[in-house]
Each structure stands twice: as C-alpha cells, then as structure tokens.
Image (cartoon, rainbow, N blue to C red; front, side, top):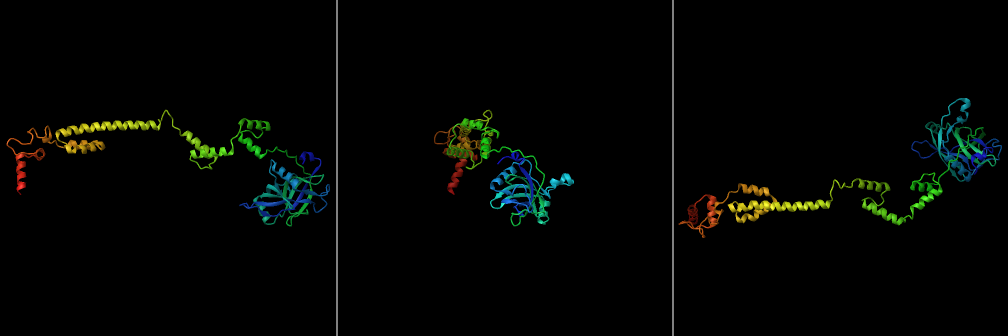
Amino acid sequence: MPSPNTHRERSAVAIAACTFAVQAAGDSAGLLRRVQFFPAGPFRSGDTRPEDVSAWRIDAASAARVIERFKARRKPLVIDYEHQTLHKEKNGQPAPAAGWPKSLEWVEGQGLFGTVEMTARAAAAIDAREYLYFSPVFTYSTVDGSVLEILMGALTNDPGIQGMQPLSLMAAATAAFLPDPLPQEPSVNPLLKALLAALGLPETTTEEAATAALAALGPLPSLKDRAAVATAACSALQLAADASAEAVTGAVASLRASQADPARFVPVEAVTALQSQIAALTARQQAADVQALIEPALADGRLLPAMETWARELGKTDVAALTAYLQTAQPVAALAGTQTGGLPPGGTAKGDAQLSSAELAVCTAMGLTPEQYKAGASATAAA
C-alpha cells in the first residue's frame, strides 16, 4: 500500500459516527471499553455520503495497514466529546479527552475493533447512557474508498451509518481536516533486534556489519554442549540446574570477590602441617616436663613405684594437676636412698624386730618406731 504522502491529492477525511458495543475489557478500574471503529466490508452514511466514491470500505488487508499506522504514531490517538478538538479554534471551548485507544484488532466478518481506556468521566457517562455512539475521524482513498488511517475519535449521540453490529449504528459527515502525514519509522525485525543485542550491536547496524560480527565469532558450540557446560557450572556453583544467567553471574562474582589474598592468608595444607609440628613439639616438651616432675618424686618418696604409671598418665592430660599433687605430697623418708633405709638386706635393725621395707615405710608415714609398730602388730594379732 502506498504511503500517505502518495495519497495526499487522492484522499479525503470523513467523520463517521458509529455506536460502540459497550463492553468491559477486564480491567480492575472498569475504564477499558471495547469499541467498534468500522464494520467489515463496504459501508455508507445514512445520507448521501460519501459522494466521491461508491462507499467506504475496509477488509483484512486494509485493516492491517490501519493497525500498522496506529502503532507507528508518535502521539497517542485522542477520543474527545462531540469532536470538540476539531471545533475548539472556532468556539474557544476546551476539548477534554474522553479516552485513549490502546490497541486495534481486526475481527473477520465483523470489522475493526479497538480497546479504549476511557477517562473516569467518560466511563461514567457511558454507563449512564449519556453517550451511546463512537465517531472515528479517518482518511480514505478517493480511488476505492478504502480506509487509510484513523486520526481521532469522539463520543457522540448522532448515529447514521449502516452496516454495524446490532448495537452499533453509524453516521457520517465530511470535514476539511487533514493533518500532515506521520513519518513512517523503519521497523526492526524482532529476531534481528534480539540478535543485534546479543552481539552488543546497535539497532542501526547494517546487515553487512552484523554478518561480519557473526563470522568473527567462529563456529558456535551445539546446544547440547552448551547445556552440558551450563549444567556443570550450576552444579559447581551449588545452584539449581535451571538457574538464570543473572544468578550464575552473581554467584561467579561473589566467588571471585571472596578469593583469599595470598599476602594475607596461607594455604590450608600449610596451616595443617604447622599445627602437626606444633602438636609434636608440645607433646615432646610435655613428656620432658612430666619426666622432670616424676623422677625426683620417685627418688624422695613422694611417689611410690606403683604410682608411676598413674602419674605419667595424669601428666599427659593435666600437668598442672600432677604438679599440684606433688607439691602437697610428703616425701617418705624410708623410701629415700635405699629401700632398707641403710639397713642390711632383710630389713633388721640392731636387736630390733625384723621389719620389711613396706612396714618400715608405714612406720615412717605414721611416725612410729619399729618397736611401736611391732608392738601394735603383736597386740592386734593377740586380739
């Protein structure tokens, strides 16, 4: 279809007052309305218009072009009351908006429909049946009457065009209103747009530059290989297999930020080896300390030979406890030096009763002379 510029001398403007099917469009505020802009096929007003063509008309092909031009608009299409936007320069009255079309769609066999976001005032007026009809302002071809572009619209109560749905009547009149055609902005294929973004290239990149950028990447890995790499990366980072790219990037950044500074930290293996060496040196020093405590204690009688094993075990676990014990233990004089206290083997004193080394130790511990000990033992035996 030629651009609006090529139809400047062969197009005209029409104001068609059409009833809209007052249907809520599912919004929470209740402001959206579904409006029929045109019926499908040829249509005329209730009077003699149009006079320069047999009828206005719209089908799927022309509707697609109308929708494309609607989407390309730089300023939103306005709907007012009674076409006041067209008359404000003459009557000096304000032209408040009644609504703003959000989207258009073609319904085969029915016509062109739009979803319009009404203002609260307009929605209330519609619900109160203060306004029943919708009147689009549009350009059309003077060759075959095809609708070219919707310019604006209005709420009105003056229907007249035939061919709408049972709830949608239409009327028409002409107006000397033709705005400058809107420049068509070049559209970018969505797939190409996504590809350029993935390559880090602007949307204005030429096809040759995009092709060169793709060639510079070289052969791309298969989807299977890429999936395996992604799964392995997620597993290593302790993320779910379906983790997003943002989650993986964040985990990698966090891991990189938490890496240890070699100037401030040493490897775990070095610390473990050092700990082992310290433990060995500590055990060796502790054994020497225990030996230094036990050896003189055995010599002066603070420890009996039978207590040596116990003392060494205590020293391994608690040197302080062993030290405290030996500091309070009293030396057994009978055990200092020889086991017989300087007596000949057999443990007999001159003319004294023969006592064993153990009995002599008891005497010393109890502060008894051998004679006192023997006397006590004899009395105990006689009893």
